[in-house]
Length: 428
RNA sequence: AGAGAGAUGGCAGAGUGGUCGAUUGCGUCGGUCUUGAAAACCGAAGACUGUAACAGGUCCGGGGGUUCGAAUCCCUCUCUCUCUGCCA
Image 1 (cartoon, rainbow, N blue to C red):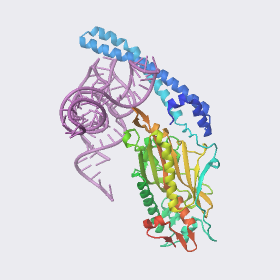
Image 2 (tube, helix red, strand yellow; image 1 turned 180 degrees about the vertical axis):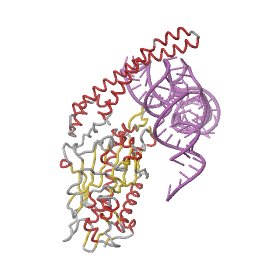
Image 3 (cartoon, rainbow, N blue to C red; image 1 turned 90 degrees about the vertical axis):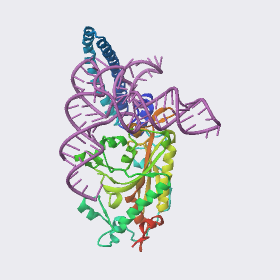
Image 4 (cartoon, helix red, strand yellow; image 1 turned 45 degrees about the vertical axis):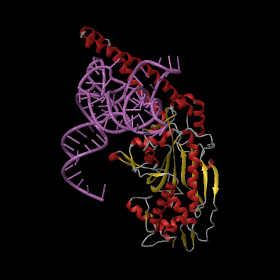
């Protein structure tokens, strides 16, 4: 959520930012916010005045009672009726204005950072860099959804989509044998690397309540993308960002605890309503997948340096895995609702001849912190901190890329860094 | 799931209708003392809103009510603890 006083004091910058995102009706929405804000403050002031008078009367009555002047007290009491009626009306309208203001405010996305490129869609994202050589595959090379069947052992493919359908439905694969072990290997590798890089590990719950969904910006509006347990009013997490960032909801962090650098592994659940199409075969898009996530809480002046550091960190993982990748700076039209600047990391999937997104690293500045009420006392005053997060990494597409890129007629070579974690070096 | 108890400032813990934003202890910060530290002593310190700055207003788990006046009384929701039951 944007800060009201920012919008108030930077109307033009706000509008420019929203235009960069192709946010519809930016002018009308901002004007509505400013009007409601003014109404709120006027009403607030009027109410405060009435309450002030009312408080004065009450203590006056108290004093009279104490002095035993019953008659004077009764007279004073009679005078409070009008104040009481007025304060009730004002309090009601204040509540209404505040609710209206809030409901408009939550529909406004974050303001993009100045380095965010112009553009409407994913086609306009800026390629920051490309790293590594795309492998030349042998004749008859297969996409990963064929490869997993080719290496059928122990009575089934190493990743079994059919079996997952039986248990749950489409998009919930069952990993078996070496398929399962390489998953576990990646999780441990990613966690160990993050710990070496100074992150501390957390294991958060994977269901969250409504307040948490609001804190990081999934709610309201994106409830359709999350699985929901109606009985207990809990959502399955779409990413560990939600529970880990919400660890710091309603917190005023002591300055000496900054920066916060957390890493966590969780499964992630996404309904992906309406996003199934031509390119979602195999591991490309799933309802449940595993991800290791890094989350940081930073002082405002450090957040962009932290973002660059996170980007380099994620790239270091991809380099260690030996996967060709590129880094994108997302354009205004393609960026997530809550982000101010996002880098996407994509790996090359050699058999599909496509780039697959495996990480998204974002700085939310104060957007989430404002919803979370995540603050610190810095230089004598309480102020909002900056939150950031990034995938490090999401497993399925990494696995898809490893399977495809490392295939030879003899088998699939496991990246060296994973071998100690897997206990085998080829799938054959 | 059943029965009971409870929810107050960073923590502990008073306060059961009238200057209570809230006694006190611990912790924290500043100072005195000390070569330095500890101890002791003195002092400071909540959040939100609002104002040019004061003032003013709100906040004792959330919401609602009674009252001139609520941390204190009533209703309701949520959560926590103890016991019983069940169970990784």
